[in-house]
Length: 335
Image 1: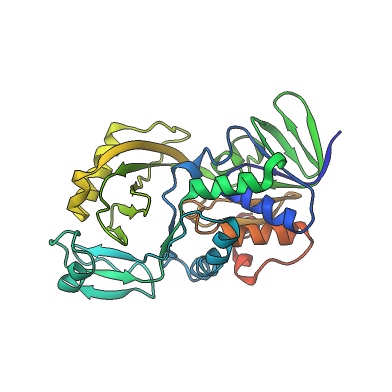
Image 2 (image 1 turned 90 degrees about the vertical axis):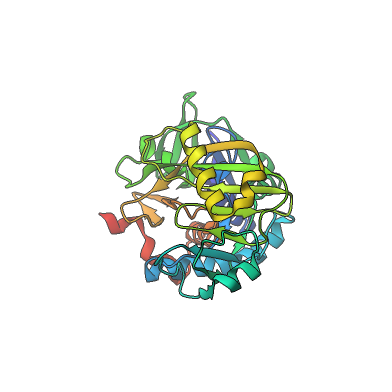
């Protein structure tokens, strides 16, 4: 029977990044992915790196991960990392999305981004917000991990010392890491408090409608230097349904055009839907759980939190304590 230091179940950005960091520590790892690497929630993600103001603990974790992103991206190569900043448009009495946000009135907002709606009252400017292309991140990680990744490996049972695959084979390891996103609790750890939350994004092509990420209460518009603009994202309690729908497409386009009218002139090239891993408090699960390590429940922040989660998983695999910001997110908080 094959044996590894760690078997990582799930080949999205969290699982791949965790495997990479573990291998950098000299551990022998494998990544077991039932489909193709990055083919789930990571594929549909827009890649916004914006630590919005949530609980104090989450804000601290998100800020630490954002601070890690420049070096993380530099190690991977050209993955579209851009510190472009963002504008959160206000059409009424919206609250600032982050403590570091700076209010700019309507005229200043239009001076910064002439393409946004003149109906806005102003906007919250967050200069440090950034973006990355999750698909390029996955491609870079796949190249680095190479034969450590096993696509088409459907794990049907996970225990503290190994996993069993759908074909009946078993793989032994010192530690198992559950990083299968919304699928972690469906078959592998039924008591783990993770639920699927469907989200749909759109990809469009044409002249970029802005230079920054533009957000409103109902949509975000992410212009990329490549000529692609990403719109996101719906939040649907729809179980494990991953079908893109016309209704969601129409909603995203309508809200995006309201925020940035020039979006109406772009060509729709893709609608993608997947399921994110939600938790009872919509905050992540990072730590020990029934003899395994969990790296899940990242909900809408999987791309943002990938560096800090990967470092935490690698530390746990090496028998070390993760960064202090990770401690509040132990899965044991729900026991």
